[in-house]
Amino acid sequence: MLASNGFSTTVFERNVQIGGGCSTAEITLPGFRHDLGSSVYPLGVSSPFFRSLPIDILWIEPSAPCAHPLDDGTAVLLEHSIEDTVANLDNFDRRKYRSLIEPIADRFHELVTDILGPIQHLPHHPLLLARFGLSALLPAASLARSRFVGVRAQALFAGMAAHSVQPLESPTSAAVALVLMAAGHAGGWPILRGGAQTLTDALAAHLESLGGRIETGHEVTTLPTRQGDEDLILADITPRQLLRIAGSELPKSYSTQLERFRYSAGAFKVDYALSCPIPWTANECARAATVHLGGTLDEIAASERSFNSDSPFVLLGQPSLFDPTRAPTDKHTAWAYCHVPNGSTLDHLEAIERQITRFAPEFRDCVLARSVSGPAALERWNPNLVGGDLSAGAMNPRQLLFRPTPSLYQTPLPGLYLCGASTPPGGGVHGMAGYHAAQTALHQLARRTKAT
Image (cartoon, rainbow, N blue to C red):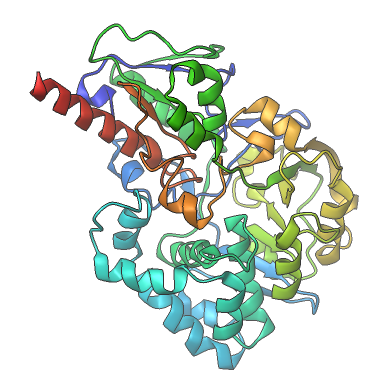
């Protein structure tokens, strides 16, 4: 956005590979390409910013967005169509699912403009956003129990809500479930051909075509000196790093607000090189790149209550089923992670694999190699993942409104702005935090210029 507005723009990247949480590398065996962070993009394909760019994004859409196996040997699937999804559910829940999700899914591309922006802004579609908010502000567990009677619908909703990385009894935990389900019906949950890195590389190439530069291996440890009023600094970091880099220059009141910012649970992640596809008991799980492993609503709610369960909710991806570039011929990749207390040092590998083998008993026979990343390893690789927090900050009610402070992207220092997942709309690969931060910076610069 800055480069397209005529600014000489340089990106400084700490690592030798660009992309951060949207990157891909061989970390198990040669020829096995693993997404290091993000891997599935329901908000990426819907992003108004990405859709506005003159770049080719190589989306691959699995035949079903998500599968959720159960102990009876079947799976309930989020399908592209609402009709096919409700066919997975018990008869008495079909009408209720349709009445809850269909109004949001039908107008999702209008709604996404509002939900991917600062929550304080004047909404483009106020009535639609209000209707969404009536359910979105509720705790996921209570909404699922009040809406649905059957195990299948409740489990499907609980798995979606667990992406909020909040206890399912928390207010607003239902919002993420509603967004992900509607996104699945409206645009799907695609992966990227070749891995997450292809999106980063496409964005980088577009930036360079606009005259921008990228410097890798360049960690910013002190606040750069601005050379003039038109110098802008957009910091894609979390409050903790901003305090470390610029704390001495920030007003005490603002620093205190940053210190109050709360991080969410961490992640414990495993990447797998496999000799064959995962042998699910429920064969229909092979239709989805994303699989939720956790059983019933009550089980998932219990695991997400403390993020310290022996039976964790596990998110699993199997991208090579749909993208043969991820692994050598007839071989496969997969990843799995669970939520753990922020900064946890415990080994959760056995707990994760116990959940996988619960629904695919012969899974371990397929494993050729593993790469295990606990919270500390994730933070060493990407310091924005504080304590292993993949969302760069809890999505609790306060931080939905004020992320990371009431001034959002702005800081008290002229020309210095925050962007990234610690600012609205929060985590996920959609580009909207940077877009809104750049717009804010350009607007403020124009005001200063006009005033002088």
